[in-house]
Amino acid sequence: MRRRTWLAVAFLILKVPATAQDTPPVFTAQGALQAAFAPWDDLEALACEAIAGARKQVLVQAYLLTSKKIVSALVDAHGRGADVRVLLDAEQLARVTPSMALVLNAAGIPIWLETKYQNAHNKIIIIDAGRSDAIVVTGSFNFTWAAQHKNAENMLIARNNLTLAARYALNWERHRQDAILYKP
Image 1: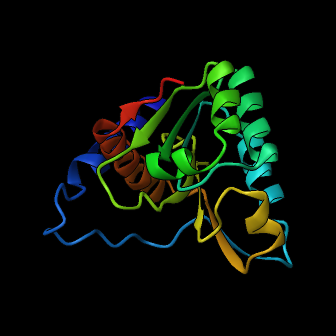
Image 2: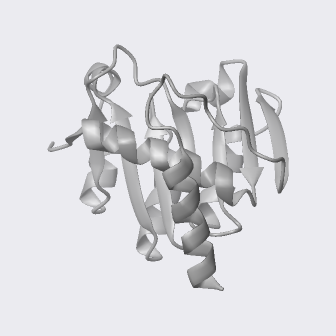
């Protein structure tokens, strides 16, 4: 069964358009969707809860990552044996105190900095992309305390959609290939 799942993911990845000129695929709705909104819903806790369920891998793309709770959840996942990898916007990291990047780095979590774009504005967490119970967390929510407590934000959590998670994971890898390894 696992081999079939990985073959299906590989097939889906090969079918994903490689350039912006191609039409992005349309996916059949499957799994479960959860929509949440700050300041009323605790988006930070929802992100941490999703990360806590990671079994194999957590891929993060963040414009900003200063939330101590989310960083702690990532470090915990790494400590449980999950492959945790992080992409950050290089300019934003240069503008804020890099303490959370230093925490991740000290825990042995690799970080890459995106420098190719004016803004690497993604806010995505991809959990266990190769599994049928994969999770994609996305929305306007920056992974910061201020986004939870001072902003109007949204988060969409898509669960159990292998195809969607594979597409997000492929995009994450495409960005990682263009990024530079963080060295504090």
